[in-house]
Image 1 (spheres, rainbow, N blue to C red):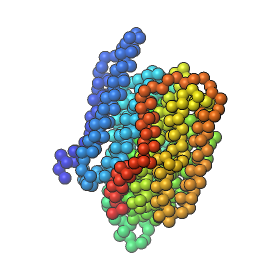
Image 2: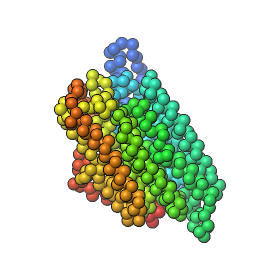
Image 3: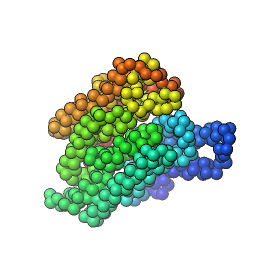
Length: 494
Protein backbone atom coordinates (compact mmCIF):
# COMPACT_ATOMS: atom_id res chain seq x y z
CA UNK A 1 0.00 0.00 0.00
CA UNK A 2 1.31 3.45 -0.93
CA UNK A 3 2.38 5.98 1.67
CA UNK A 4 -0.46 8.26 0.60
CA UNK A 5 -2.97 5.49 1.28
CA UNK A 6 -1.35 4.84 4.67
CA UNK A 7 -1.64 8.49 5.63
CA UNK A 8 -5.22 8.84 4.41
CA UNK A 9 -6.23 5.79 6.47
CA UNK A 10 -5.12 7.48 9.68
CA UNK A 11 -6.39 10.95 8.74
CA UNK A 12 -8.44 11.25 11.98
CA UNK A 13 -5.37 10.59 14.12
CA UNK A 14 -3.31 13.06 12.10
CA UNK A 15 -6.00 15.72 12.48
CA UNK A 16 -6.02 15.23 16.25
CA UNK A 17 -2.22 15.42 16.48
CA UNK A 18 -1.96 18.52 14.28
CA UNK A 19 -4.90 20.12 16.10
CA UNK A 20 -3.28 19.47 19.48
CA UNK A 21 0.00 21.00 18.33
CA UNK A 22 -1.79 24.02 16.84
CA UNK A 23 -3.69 24.63 20.08
CA UNK A 24 -0.49 24.21 22.07
CA UNK A 25 1.30 26.81 19.96
CA UNK A 26 -1.68 29.16 20.04
CA UNK A 27 -1.90 28.89 23.80
CA UNK A 28 1.81 29.24 24.40
CA UNK A 29 2.33 32.29 22.20
CA UNK A 30 -0.89 34.18 22.89
CA UNK A 31 -0.34 37.16 25.14
CA UNK A 32 -2.27 36.75 28.37
CA UNK A 33 -2.13 38.70 31.58
CA UNK A 34 -4.09 38.19 34.75
CA UNK A 35 -3.15 41.31 36.68
CA UNK A 36 -6.62 42.89 36.66
CA UNK A 37 -10.13 41.52 36.61
CA UNK A 38 -10.73 42.63 33.00
CA UNK A 39 -7.75 40.61 31.84
CA UNK A 40 -9.03 37.63 33.78
CA UNK A 41 -12.31 37.80 31.88
CA UNK A 42 -10.41 38.02 28.58
CA UNK A 43 -8.28 35.04 29.60
CA UNK A 44 -11.35 32.99 30.52
CA UNK A 45 -12.94 33.79 27.17
CA UNK A 46 -9.69 32.83 25.45
CA UNK A 47 -9.53 29.47 27.21
CA UNK A 48 -13.20 28.79 26.43
CA UNK A 49 -12.37 29.46 22.79
CA UNK A 50 -9.57 26.88 23.04
CA UNK A 51 -12.03 24.29 24.33
CA UNK A 52 -14.41 25.07 21.49
CA UNK A 53 -11.51 24.67 19.07
CA UNK A 54 -10.73 21.28 20.63
CA UNK A 55 -14.35 20.23 20.16
CA UNK A 56 -14.16 21.31 16.51
CA UNK A 57 -11.01 19.23 15.96
CA UNK A 58 -12.67 16.17 17.51
CA UNK A 59 -15.77 16.70 15.37
CA UNK A 60 -13.62 17.00 12.22
CA UNK A 61 -11.79 13.78 13.07
CA UNK A 62 -15.15 12.06 13.63
CA UNK A 63 -16.41 13.27 10.25
CA UNK A 64 -13.28 11.95 8.54
CA UNK A 65 -13.94 8.47 9.92
CA UNK A 66 -17.14 8.26 7.90
CA UNK A 67 -15.18 8.96 4.71
CA UNK A 68 -12.94 5.91 5.16
CA UNK A 69 -13.74 2.68 3.27
CA UNK A 70 -15.32 -0.03 5.40
CA UNK A 71 -13.13 -2.76 3.91
CA UNK A 72 -10.33 -3.97 6.17
CA UNK A 73 -6.91 -2.60 5.22
CA UNK A 74 -3.49 -3.09 6.79
CA UNK A 75 -1.27 -0.02 6.89
CA UNK A 76 2.33 0.73 7.82
CA UNK A 77 3.49 -2.82 7.23
CA UNK A 78 0.62 -4.36 9.18
CA UNK A 79 1.29 -2.35 12.35
CA UNK A 80 -2.19 -0.84 12.15
CA UNK A 81 -5.49 -2.05 10.75
CA UNK A 82 -8.45 0.05 9.69
CA UNK A 83 -11.81 -1.72 9.40
CA UNK A 84 -15.45 -1.44 10.41
CA UNK A 85 -14.65 -2.42 13.99
CA UNK A 86 -12.04 0.31 14.42
CA UNK A 87 -14.31 2.91 12.80
CA UNK A 88 -17.22 2.05 15.11
CA UNK A 89 -15.10 2.31 18.26
CA UNK A 90 -13.29 5.45 17.09
CA UNK A 91 -16.60 7.25 16.65
CA UNK A 92 -17.61 6.32 20.21
CA UNK A 93 -14.25 7.51 21.58
CA UNK A 94 -14.50 10.84 19.79
CA UNK A 95 -18.06 11.32 21.04
CA UNK A 96 -16.75 10.68 24.55
CA UNK A 97 -14.03 13.29 23.99
CA UNK A 98 -16.51 15.86 22.70
CA UNK A 99 -18.84 15.17 25.61
CA UNK A 100 -16.00 15.43 28.11
CA UNK A 101 -14.95 18.84 26.76
CA UNK A 102 -18.51 20.18 26.72
CA UNK A 103 -18.94 19.13 30.36
CA UNK A 104 -15.76 20.96 31.36
CA UNK A 105 -16.64 24.59 30.48
CA UNK A 106 -18.43 25.80 33.61
CA UNK A 107 -16.50 23.57 36.01
CA UNK A 108 -13.09 24.76 34.86
CA UNK A 109 -14.16 28.40 34.93
CA UNK A 110 -15.64 28.03 38.42
CA UNK A 111 -12.49 26.39 39.78
CA UNK A 112 -10.10 28.76 38.02
CA UNK A 113 -8.71 25.87 35.96
CA UNK A 114 -9.41 27.28 32.49
CA UNK A 115 -6.02 26.51 30.95
CA UNK A 116 -5.26 26.01 27.29
CA UNK A 117 -3.43 22.78 28.11
CA UNK A 118 -6.69 21.02 28.98
CA UNK A 119 -8.07 20.53 25.44
CA UNK A 120 -4.54 19.79 24.20
CA UNK A 121 -4.23 16.89 26.64
CA UNK A 122 -7.68 15.57 25.71
CA UNK A 123 -6.82 15.67 21.99
CA UNK A 124 -3.50 13.88 22.48
CA UNK A 125 -5.10 11.23 24.65
CA UNK A 126 -7.87 10.67 22.08
CA UNK A 127 -5.25 10.34 19.33
CA UNK A 128 -3.59 7.57 21.32
CA UNK A 129 -6.93 5.87 21.91
CA UNK A 130 -7.73 5.86 18.18
CA UNK A 131 -4.37 4.23 17.51
CA UNK A 132 -5.09 1.68 20.26
CA UNK A 133 -8.25 0.63 18.44
CA UNK A 134 -6.30 0.10 15.21
CA UNK A 135 -3.24 -1.57 16.80
CA UNK A 136 -2.30 -4.80 15.01
CA UNK A 137 1.15 -5.30 16.49
CA UNK A 138 2.54 -5.48 20.02
CA UNK A 139 4.81 -2.48 19.41
CA UNK A 140 2.06 -0.25 18.02
CA UNK A 141 -0.17 -1.49 20.85
CA UNK A 142 2.26 -0.30 23.51
CA UNK A 143 3.08 3.01 21.87
CA UNK A 144 -0.60 3.84 21.42
CA UNK A 145 -1.37 2.79 24.99
CA UNK A 146 1.29 5.09 26.41
CA UNK A 147 0.30 7.99 24.15
CA UNK A 148 -3.23 7.75 25.50
CA UNK A 149 -2.20 7.19 29.14
CA UNK A 150 0.39 9.92 29.74
CA UNK A 151 -2.05 12.82 29.19
CA UNK A 152 -4.54 11.06 31.46
CA UNK A 153 -2.07 11.08 34.36
CA UNK A 154 -1.75 14.86 33.97
CA UNK A 155 -5.51 15.37 33.65
CA UNK A 156 -6.12 13.44 36.88
CA UNK A 157 -3.91 15.94 38.74
CA UNK A 158 -5.05 18.96 36.72
CA UNK A 159 -6.36 20.70 39.85
CA UNK A 160 -2.86 20.76 41.27
CA UNK A 161 -3.72 22.99 44.24
CA UNK A 162 -6.17 20.36 45.44
CA UNK A 163 -4.66 17.60 47.57
CA UNK A 164 -7.12 14.94 46.42
CA UNK A 165 -6.50 15.72 42.75
CA UNK A 166 -2.72 15.54 43.20
CA UNK A 167 -3.12 12.27 45.07
CA UNK A 168 -5.35 10.90 42.29
CA UNK A 169 -2.77 11.79 39.64
CA UNK A 170 0.07 10.22 41.62
CA UNK A 171 -1.84 6.99 42.30
CA UNK A 172 -2.92 6.72 38.69
CA UNK A 173 0.63 7.31 37.45
CA UNK A 174 2.33 4.83 39.79
CA UNK A 175 -0.19 2.03 39.24
CA UNK A 176 -0.37 2.82 35.52
CA UNK A 177 3.41 2.49 35.25
CA UNK A 178 3.21 -0.85 37.07
CA UNK A 179 0.55 -2.14 34.69
CA UNK A 180 2.54 -0.95 31.67
CA UNK A 181 5.57 -2.83 32.97
CA UNK A 182 3.57 -6.05 33.32
CA UNK A 183 2.12 -5.57 29.85
CA UNK A 184 5.62 -5.07 28.42
CA UNK A 185 6.86 -8.19 30.19
CA UNK A 186 3.99 -10.17 28.71
CA UNK A 187 4.73 -8.75 25.26
CA UNK A 188 8.38 -9.75 25.58
CA UNK A 189 7.37 -13.31 26.51
CA UNK A 190 5.00 -13.47 23.56
CA UNK A 191 7.72 -12.23 21.22
CA UNK A 192 10.21 -14.68 22.68
CA UNK A 193 7.97 -17.69 22.13
CA UNK A 194 6.56 -16.67 18.74
CA UNK A 195 9.39 -14.75 17.13
CA UNK A 196 7.10 -11.95 16.01
CA UNK A 197 5.20 -8.94 17.34
CA UNK A 198 2.58 -8.97 14.57
CA UNK A 199 -0.86 -10.25 15.61
CA UNK A 200 -1.23 -12.25 12.39
CA UNK A 201 2.03 -14.11 13.00
CA UNK A 202 1.31 -14.70 16.68
CA UNK A 203 -2.06 -16.20 15.74
CA UNK A 204 -0.34 -18.85 13.59
CA UNK A 205 1.76 -20.28 16.41
CA UNK A 206 -0.94 -22.24 18.34
CA UNK A 207 -2.21 -23.70 15.05
CA UNK A 208 1.24 -25.12 14.26
CA UNK A 209 1.68 -26.86 17.61
CA UNK A 210 -0.65 -29.80 16.93
CA UNK A 211 -2.52 -29.36 20.18
CA UNK A 212 0.59 -29.05 22.36
CA UNK A 213 0.13 -25.92 24.46
CA UNK A 214 2.94 -23.41 24.60
CA UNK A 215 3.08 -22.59 28.30
CA UNK A 216 5.37 -19.62 27.75
CA UNK A 217 2.93 -18.09 25.29
CA UNK A 218 0.10 -18.52 27.77
CA UNK A 219 2.14 -16.82 30.50
CA UNK A 220 2.78 -13.93 28.14
CA UNK A 221 -0.93 -13.70 27.39
CA UNK A 222 -1.73 -13.59 31.11
CA UNK A 223 0.64 -10.67 31.74
CA UNK A 224 -0.69 -8.88 28.68
CA UNK A 225 -4.24 -9.29 29.99
CA UNK A 226 -3.17 -7.92 33.37
CA UNK A 227 -2.04 -4.70 31.74
CA UNK A 228 -5.24 -4.38 29.72
CA UNK A 229 -7.44 -5.28 32.71
CA UNK A 230 -5.90 -2.35 34.58
CA UNK A 231 -6.82 0.02 31.77
CA UNK A 232 -10.48 -1.06 31.86
CA UNK A 233 -10.41 -1.14 35.71
CA UNK A 234 -11.52 -4.76 35.87
CA UNK A 235 -11.23 -6.72 39.11
CA UNK A 236 -8.70 -7.51 40.58
CA UNK A 237 -6.88 -4.57 38.96
CA UNK A 238 -9.45 -1.96 39.89
CA UNK A 239 -7.82 -0.60 43.05
CA UNK A 240 -7.03 2.80 41.55
CA UNK A 241 -10.51 3.55 40.24
CA UNK A 242 -12.50 4.86 43.28
CA UNK A 243 -9.71 7.14 44.53
CA UNK A 244 -8.89 8.53 41.09
CA UNK A 245 -12.55 9.07 40.19
CA UNK A 246 -13.18 10.88 43.48
CA UNK A 247 -10.03 13.00 43.43
CA UNK A 248 -9.87 14.02 39.78
CA UNK A 249 -11.83 17.06 38.57
CA UNK A 250 -15.37 15.90 37.79
CA UNK A 251 -15.23 16.52 33.99
CA UNK A 252 -11.98 14.54 33.93
CA UNK A 253 -13.70 11.74 35.84
CA UNK A 254 -16.46 11.73 33.20
CA UNK A 255 -13.82 11.45 30.48
CA UNK A 256 -12.05 8.66 32.39
CA UNK A 257 -15.27 6.71 32.82
CA UNK A 258 -15.99 6.77 29.09
CA UNK A 259 -13.18 7.16 26.55
CA UNK A 260 -10.24 5.14 28.01
CA UNK A 261 -12.53 2.23 28.84
CA UNK A 262 -13.90 2.14 25.28
CA UNK A 263 -10.39 2.16 23.82
CA UNK A 264 -9.06 -0.50 26.17
CA UNK A 265 -12.08 -2.76 25.60
CA UNK A 266 -11.62 -2.42 21.83
CA UNK A 267 -7.93 -3.25 22.15
CA UNK A 268 -8.76 -6.24 24.36
CA UNK A 269 -11.20 -7.56 21.77
CA UNK A 270 -8.66 -7.00 18.99
CA UNK A 271 -5.90 -8.84 20.87
CA UNK A 272 -8.04 -11.81 21.90
CA UNK A 273 -9.83 -12.10 18.56
CA UNK A 274 -6.74 -11.52 16.45
CA UNK A 275 -3.45 -12.56 18.01
CA UNK A 276 -4.83 -15.20 20.38
CA UNK A 277 -7.82 -16.64 18.56
CA UNK A 278 -6.08 -20.04 18.68
CA UNK A 279 -5.89 -19.92 22.49
CA UNK A 280 -9.54 -19.11 23.09
CA UNK A 281 -9.98 -22.01 25.53
CA UNK A 282 -7.32 -20.46 27.75
CA UNK A 283 -8.19 -16.77 27.64
CA UNK A 284 -11.91 -17.50 27.87
CA UNK A 285 -11.41 -18.85 31.40
CA UNK A 286 -9.55 -15.68 32.41
CA UNK A 287 -12.21 -13.39 30.94
CA UNK A 288 -15.00 -15.33 32.67
CA UNK A 289 -13.27 -14.98 36.05
CA UNK A 290 -12.55 -11.27 35.56
CA UNK A 291 -16.12 -10.66 34.37
CA UNK A 292 -17.69 -12.39 37.37
CA UNK A 293 -15.35 -10.68 39.84
CA UNK A 294 -16.03 -7.25 38.31
CA UNK A 295 -19.81 -7.69 38.27
CA UNK A 296 -19.94 -8.92 41.86
CA UNK A 297 -17.58 -6.34 43.33
CA UNK A 298 -19.20 -3.53 41.36
CA UNK A 299 -22.59 -4.57 42.72
CA UNK A 300 -21.58 -5.07 46.36
CA UNK A 301 -18.88 -2.48 47.03
CA UNK A 302 -20.93 0.47 45.79
CA UNK A 303 -23.71 -0.14 48.31
CA UNK A 304 -21.83 1.52 51.18
CA UNK A 305 -20.68 4.57 49.19
CA UNK A 306 -22.14 7.99 49.98
CA UNK A 307 -19.97 9.96 47.55
CA UNK A 308 -21.67 9.74 44.16
CA UNK A 309 -18.37 9.83 42.24
CA UNK A 310 -17.07 6.83 44.19
CA UNK A 311 -20.40 5.12 43.60
CA UNK A 312 -20.01 5.72 39.86
CA UNK A 313 -16.47 4.34 40.06
CA UNK A 314 -17.75 1.00 41.36
CA UNK A 315 -20.62 1.21 38.91
CA UNK A 316 -18.14 1.50 36.03
CA UNK A 317 -16.28 -1.55 37.34
CA UNK A 318 -19.53 -3.51 37.31
CA UNK A 319 -20.40 -2.36 33.79
CA UNK A 320 -16.99 -3.47 32.54
CA UNK A 321 -17.87 -6.90 33.94
CA UNK A 322 -21.14 -6.90 32.00
CA UNK A 323 -19.36 -5.89 28.79
CA UNK A 324 -16.84 -8.71 29.30
CA UNK A 325 -19.70 -11.21 29.34
CA UNK A 326 -20.04 -10.63 25.60
CA UNK A 327 -16.28 -11.00 25.10
CA UNK A 328 -16.30 -14.31 27.01
CA UNK A 329 -18.91 -15.68 24.61
CA UNK A 330 -16.19 -15.70 21.90
CA UNK A 331 -18.65 -15.34 19.04
CA UNK A 332 -19.99 -12.78 16.59
CA UNK A 333 -23.13 -12.37 18.71
CA UNK A 334 -20.95 -11.79 21.77
CA UNK A 335 -18.83 -9.16 20.01
CA UNK A 336 -21.94 -7.43 18.67
CA UNK A 337 -23.52 -7.44 22.14
CA UNK A 338 -20.39 -5.93 23.68
CA UNK A 339 -20.29 -3.15 21.12
CA UNK A 340 -23.96 -2.31 21.65
CA UNK A 341 -23.43 -2.36 25.41
CA UNK A 342 -20.41 -0.03 25.19
CA UNK A 343 -22.36 2.49 23.09
CA UNK A 344 -25.22 2.49 25.61
CA UNK A 345 -22.76 2.72 28.51
CA UNK A 346 -21.18 5.79 26.91
CA UNK A 347 -24.51 7.61 26.71
CA UNK A 348 -25.46 6.70 30.28
CA UNK A 349 -22.08 7.76 31.66
CA UNK A 350 -21.99 11.17 29.99
CA UNK A 351 -25.59 11.82 31.03
CA UNK A 352 -25.03 10.90 34.67
CA UNK A 353 -21.90 13.02 34.98
CA UNK A 354 -23.74 15.94 33.41
CA UNK A 355 -26.25 15.47 36.21
CA UNK A 356 -23.49 15.30 38.82
CA UNK A 357 -21.97 18.55 37.52
CA UNK A 358 -25.43 20.15 37.68
CA UNK A 359 -25.72 19.38 41.42
CA UNK A 360 -24.64 22.78 42.70
CA UNK A 361 -25.51 24.91 45.70
CA UNK A 362 -23.95 28.38 45.84
CA UNK A 363 -21.62 27.32 43.00
CA UNK A 364 -20.32 24.40 45.08
CA UNK A 365 -20.67 20.85 43.81
CA UNK A 366 -22.79 18.50 45.89
CA UNK A 367 -21.15 15.08 45.73
CA UNK A 368 -22.84 13.39 48.71
CA UNK A 369 -25.90 11.35 47.80
CA UNK A 370 -27.69 12.52 50.94
CA UNK A 371 -27.23 16.08 49.71
CA UNK A 372 -29.73 15.35 46.91
CA UNK A 373 -32.61 15.13 49.37
CA UNK A 374 -35.84 16.36 47.87
CA UNK A 375 -34.25 17.46 44.61
CA UNK A 376 -37.45 16.57 42.73
CA UNK A 377 -39.37 19.22 44.65
CA UNK A 378 -36.81 21.90 43.84
CA UNK A 379 -35.80 20.92 40.29
CA UNK A 380 -38.06 18.26 38.79
CA UNK A 381 -36.47 18.19 35.28
CA UNK A 382 -32.99 17.57 36.71
CA UNK A 383 -34.25 14.90 39.12
CA UNK A 384 -36.26 13.20 36.38
CA UNK A 385 -33.28 13.11 34.03
CA UNK A 386 -31.01 11.62 36.68
CA UNK A 387 -33.72 9.11 37.62
CA UNK A 388 -34.12 7.87 34.03
CA UNK A 389 -30.36 7.43 33.72
CA UNK A 390 -30.17 5.61 37.06
CA UNK A 391 -32.99 3.28 35.99
CA UNK A 392 -31.09 2.56 32.78
CA UNK A 393 -27.82 1.92 34.64
CA UNK A 394 -29.72 -0.49 36.88
CA UNK A 395 -30.99 -2.32 33.80
CA UNK A 396 -34.69 -1.76 34.37
CA UNK A 397 -36.89 -2.49 31.32
CA UNK A 398 -37.58 -1.16 28.80
CA UNK A 399 -34.72 1.36 28.85
CA UNK A 400 -31.52 0.99 26.82
CA UNK A 401 -29.50 -0.31 29.78
CA UNK A 402 -31.85 -3.29 30.06
CA UNK A 403 -31.58 -4.03 26.33
CA UNK A 404 -27.78 -3.86 26.50
CA UNK A 405 -27.67 -6.39 29.31
CA UNK A 406 -30.17 -8.55 27.48
CA UNK A 407 -27.84 -8.66 24.49
CA UNK A 408 -24.75 -9.73 26.45
CA UNK A 409 -26.60 -12.30 28.57
CA UNK A 410 -28.24 -13.77 25.46
CA UNK A 411 -24.82 -14.13 23.83
CA UNK A 412 -23.50 -15.90 26.94
CA UNK A 413 -26.46 -18.30 26.97
CA UNK A 414 -26.01 -19.09 23.27
CA UNK A 415 -22.35 -19.87 24.01
CA UNK A 416 -23.39 -22.24 26.81
CA UNK A 417 -22.07 -19.99 29.60
CA UNK A 418 -25.14 -20.39 31.79
CA UNK A 419 -23.41 -19.77 35.19
CA UNK A 420 -21.92 -16.53 33.86
CA UNK A 421 -25.30 -15.27 32.70
CA UNK A 422 -27.00 -16.25 35.97
CA UNK A 423 -24.35 -14.52 38.10
CA UNK A 424 -24.63 -11.46 35.86
CA UNK A 425 -28.39 -11.27 36.38
CA UNK A 426 -28.01 -11.63 40.16
CA UNK A 427 -25.28 -8.95 40.24
CA UNK A 428 -27.53 -6.64 38.24
CA UNK A 429 -30.34 -7.13 40.77
CA UNK A 430 -28.01 -6.33 43.69
CA UNK A 431 -26.61 -3.28 41.92
CA UNK A 432 -30.10 -1.91 41.38
CA UNK A 433 -30.20 -1.10 45.11
CA UNK A 434 -27.71 1.77 45.03
CA UNK A 435 -29.10 3.22 41.80
CA UNK A 436 -32.62 3.20 43.21
CA UNK A 437 -31.33 4.68 46.46
CA UNK A 438 -30.33 7.82 44.56
CA UNK A 439 -33.84 8.04 43.08
CA UNK A 440 -35.40 7.51 46.50
CA UNK A 441 -33.32 10.31 48.05
CA UNK A 442 -34.24 12.72 45.27
CA UNK A 443 -37.97 12.04 45.23
CA UNK A 444 -38.96 10.94 48.73
CA UNK A 445 -36.58 12.52 51.27
CA UNK A 446 -37.22 15.88 52.89
CA UNK A 447 -36.10 18.72 50.60
CA UNK A 448 -32.99 20.70 51.40
CA UNK A 449 -31.80 24.03 50.09
CA UNK A 450 -32.47 24.66 46.40
CA UNK A 451 -29.85 23.90 43.78
CA UNK A 452 -28.32 26.52 41.54
CA UNK A 453 -29.80 26.78 38.00
CA UNK A 454 -28.49 24.17 35.55
CA UNK A 455 -26.18 25.51 32.86
CA UNK A 456 -27.29 25.04 29.26
CA UNK A 457 -24.35 22.85 28.19
CA UNK A 458 -25.06 20.37 30.99
CA UNK A 459 -28.75 20.29 30.07
CA UNK A 460 -27.74 19.60 26.45
CA UNK A 461 -25.62 16.57 27.34
CA UNK A 462 -28.11 15.15 29.82
CA UNK A 463 -31.04 15.72 27.46
CA UNK A 464 -29.21 14.02 24.59
CA UNK A 465 -28.38 11.05 26.82
CA UNK A 466 -31.98 10.69 28.03
CA UNK A 467 -33.30 10.91 24.46
CA UNK A 468 -30.86 8.19 23.39
CA UNK A 469 -31.75 5.96 26.35
CA UNK A 470 -35.46 6.21 25.60
CA UNK A 471 -35.12 6.35 21.81
CA UNK A 472 -32.99 3.22 21.60
CA UNK A 473 -35.86 1.03 22.78
CA UNK A 474 -38.01 2.49 19.97
CA UNK A 475 -35.46 2.53 17.12
CA UNK A 476 -32.59 0.17 17.99
CA UNK A 477 -31.75 -0.97 14.45
CA UNK A 478 -29.18 1.71 13.38
CA UNK A 479 -26.88 1.06 16.33
CA UNK A 480 -27.42 -2.71 16.25
CA UNK A 481 -26.69 -2.87 12.53
CA UNK A 482 -23.53 -0.79 12.91
CA UNK A 483 -22.38 -3.04 15.77
CA UNK A 484 -23.10 -6.14 13.67
CA UNK A 485 -21.01 -4.85 10.77
CA UNK A 486 -18.20 -3.92 13.15
CA UNK A 487 -18.23 -7.34 14.84
CA UNK A 488 -17.92 -9.14 11.50
CA UNK A 489 -14.54 -7.58 10.87
CA UNK A 490 -12.89 -9.10 13.96
CA UNK A 491 -10.43 -11.85 13.07
CA UNK A 492 -11.81 -14.66 15.21
CA UNK A 493 -15.20 -14.36 13.53
CA UNK A 494 -13.89 -15.03 10.04
